[in-house]
Length: 146
Image 1 (tube, rainbow, N blue to C red):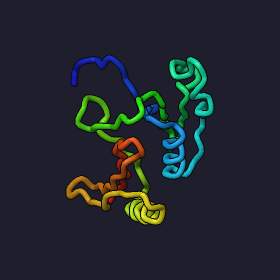
Image 2: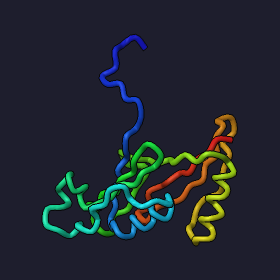
Image 3: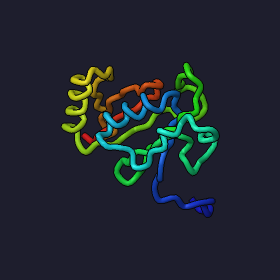
Image 4: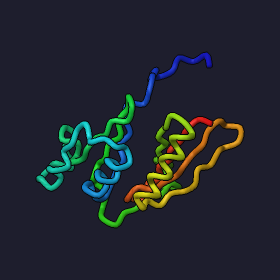
């Protein structure tokens, strides 16, 4: 490419997901990621104006994932559900270290009673994936090199 890019990002800093129920989503992501939020304003979600305040994370929380962050923003209407075929997010893929880690995650999901797909090795891509839906039906993909 010979054009000068408009920006030169070096990494993704964070991704924020819109959710319907912050308590339910926070519990799910805490269990999935095995960490507490780095920033958490979810106890203020019902305060006047908090859902409009970026300084209070809209009443949500942010989880650390390696050097990046995954935030939850509780502003979706009750009963709203995610659709991967609409403009916006298709899915969020979280990288694990190895195929053994991916298989171990599948076993832990089974033990926790969390419905998920199977571990699929994608031929020619050097990647294996495991799909799981969050409480708002957002597709999460756990991935690992093969």
